[in-house]
Amino acid sequence: SQQGEEDPQALSIQEGENATMNCSYKTSINNLQWYRQNSGRGLVHLILIRSNEREKHSGRLRVTLDTSKKSSSLLITASRAADTASYFCATVRTLGGSNYKLTFGKGTLLTVNP
Amino acid sequence: EPEVTQTPSHQVTQMGQEVILRCVPISNHLYFYWYRQILGQKVEFLVSFYNNEISEKSEIFDDQFSVERPDGSNFTLKIRSTKLEDSAMYFCASYMGYEQYFGPGTRLTVT
Image 1 (tube, one colour):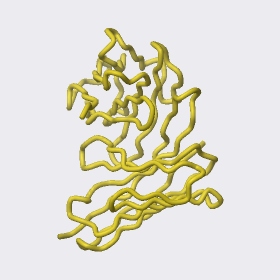
Image 2 (image 1 turned 120 degrees about the vertical axis):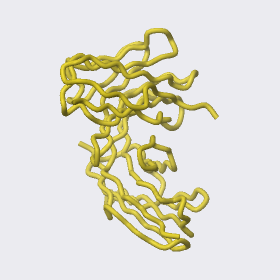
Image 3 (image 1 turned 180 degrees about the vertical axis):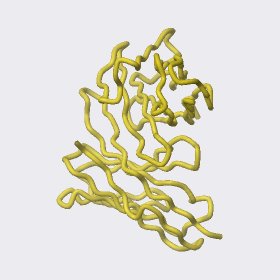
Image 4 (image 1 turned 30 degrees about the horizontal axis):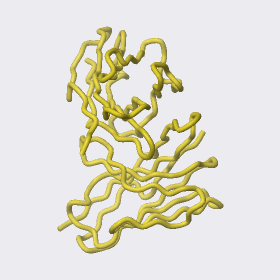
């Protein structure tokens, strides 16, 4: 089954530094998405990268995808204390038509110290 | 901005009791989902619901679970006889066209 596995499991950095989180998966995908979760809260969609894309930017976020290595990375530049959260990659499997399901990894807990 | 809402935010129940978790998806969305997250573990897919029927369910979603969209706005997850291992955060999500929008979750505690 598809599985996103992030590393590191936890990352602690200083405000202003960049944070890089990696994700590996096992099977072919339609696309890969990154989500953020603040402690005890819901999941917020950050960015989607399609299987035919190699890199995508959104504000301070940069996502790469290497389908040959079945891996993705999320870079947050110039981090802020408010970026403290858990970050999950999720692989997408189509269920038919426009329907799809997400398979999440265990996540990386990012702590940005002021 | 439209959002998915869930009630209650926290539900405590005794083992063997039935619980119903409620969700109001975004109004023009067509696909609805339940996911759960046991404390400290991954978010896991439970079920997908489209056109008033289940389109896919995971092995977790056994006969104790059921979903319903009773009135065109609410989307519910029922657990008939809760077990201790059902304690988790349950997330509802809805989707049309691009990304799945998640609700804030219901924390279910089974004692």
